[in-house]
Amino acid sequence: MQIVLIIAGVFAVIAILMYNSLIGKKNQVENIFAGVDAVLKKRFDLIPNLVASVSQYMEHEKSTLEKVTELRAQAMKPGISDEQKISLDAKLTSALGAINIAMEAYPDLKANENVMHLQRSLNEIEEQISAARRAYNQAVTDLNNAIEMFPTNLMAGWMNLQRKAVFEITVTERQNVDVDALFNK
Amino acid sequence: MKSLSELTDFYYKELYPSLDELEKKRLQIVSQLKWYGGMGAVVFALTAMWMGKNFGLLHPLSIGIILAFIVLASITYRFMTSDYAKDFKAKIITPLIGAIDSNLLYNPDFMISQYLFERSQLFNHSIDRYSGNDYVKGSIDGVPLEFSDVHAEYQTKDSKGRTQWHTLFRGLFLVAEFNKYFKSKTVILPDQAEKNFGSLIGGWLQSINFSRDDLIRLDDPEFEKVFVVYGNDPIEARYILSYSMMKRILDFQKKISHPLFVSFVHNHIHIGIGTKKDLFEPAIFTSLLDFKQAMEYINTLRYTIGLVEELKLNEKLWSKE
Image: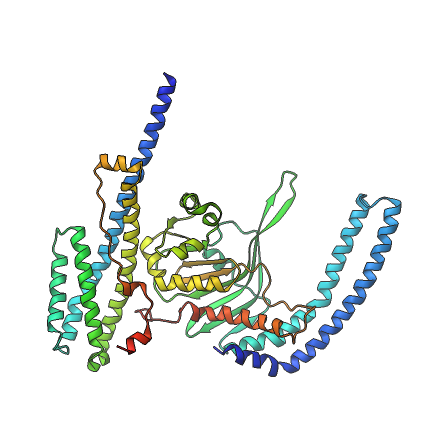
């Protein structure tokens, strides 16, 4: 009888530990996503300024600028899911990258201190976003691993935890800036 | 910063008069040391023979006398070489540091403050004895930095109440301003656990280290294999440790054969290189004109000061100005 009780006790302890570690991982993901959200918001705040400052110079990139404004509006809508946020973020990043490159063609823009300051701030925020994405991906990977690996997968199935999507880390983020390639374009 | 060949030229051309003078002094000391050493050895041998005959070599009195000999010999050695070491620092190292960058100040007797050393949070143990020398302070490419030799120790008492001293860290310690703003703490240590126990058990051991903040697993497998990272903000840790920064730290670790400790606290980068020896102590038994020896002095300085460029601390691309 005692042995049965001891075994039951051990199982209960293991179950509690597994449950707590899964909850910890889930909360960590949410916690870091809040951090991602905060830096994304910072970027949203800058975008109208940037668009307003550069639109008078950049005649040929009107469509890109409009796209950026539209993406921002979409991403700021209340009640969109995390997955949607992640995919909008990727689109916005690439559109902003396109503007960055296009700005090279306008010497007037590069002489404008206000625009340069905006661009620097935007660059810094991109760095912060990149860091937040990487932190989020690690937390999600930890959670996804726990959801799929034995024995925590049994507990996760019972708790109805779902796998989460990660941010794509773009190739350009991984690489160091290659100055040669920039000039040989 | 001047190139290696420029500095080598400077060492052999500009410093030649001082080198020549010091080299003469060195040879004199070496011959004196040989003379005293020979005398000491003869006296020691005679005493040992006499003691051996009368008491036996393991008698407490014999051991006491042997210890006294060793202490006497090391005091004599210190006494004879300390002037030479002082001259060497004043006449060779001081101008050499000036040649690398005229902004740098050098003080052979001063050291980085214990406050900065403890602020780095690299070593959690309390410190009972703190010393150092060869302090350099200034700025390179607009980046304020300071470094020195540091020797931090702590003491323990054994069951018989005897105190024992243990070295916590001995080597070069550098503090420089970092080029990004941050509020968190991030500590990078050499990865012992994963090396000894493999990634599965080692990784688990690291994650339950109670004396540290949370374990931060980074997405560069090579970096992860060499270092373990603790921090209290997973996002800021990655903001500081971008892919390129991880690569630079890893490359630096590959260049040096000593353990590397790096921490980011209070907007500063703290770097400890566990060389386990003093930096600019002149080698008595090697010629100052010896190329290898000269290279060692020059390279140590270049690597240390070059860290600013190596880690691109001078790149203020962002809004921090």
